[in-house]
Length: 237
Image 1: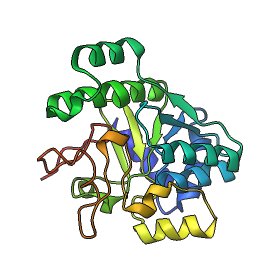
Image 2 (image 1 turned 45 degrees about the horizontal axis):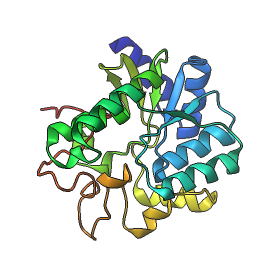
Image 3 (image 1 turned 135 degrees about the vertical axis):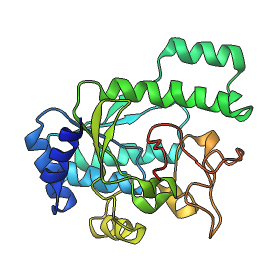
């Protein structure tokens, strides 16, 4: 476990993000996978993967509650690069049971209900997507939230039994935007309307200037840690 993480650290140390991705694809053929939600950061990484024809599978979680703008970005990305983006959906039986028993908006009623919805729509499909892979690529950046500042660019994911690698972990938002502008990469129009972090439509709102990066996610909950469980990390002392 720790040796595997150390191997990835050594392999990617000192490399530019695209170079690091290429090194991982070569070292772990058919075992590297990237999850995109079509946000700024993910569009940068998709460009690096697709433009360099890297053998990294790109997938997304189709929760059934995404913004129209997200579907637009999804289509534009596939048109631009001509590459497949694999969709993983919630299991029908789990979703039907939840909605039948609690209604379509139960996530507003309690944290427990919201986490149940996140599990069915995101976490369970994610586990299916990751199964059989060794390295999970993400678009996480350190400055995105206080919790994520306790992370490193290479981590061991205990729950999925694999290494996570964040190639643009140390990038600033301005660097991300600059890259998108330089290569004319399609991005979600909601970013220009005050949405720095974009998830499911009922659970995401725009944020005001000066608000926390993730203040628009599950804004009705009084909690300091705005995570759905996909990238939840315990704070280190």
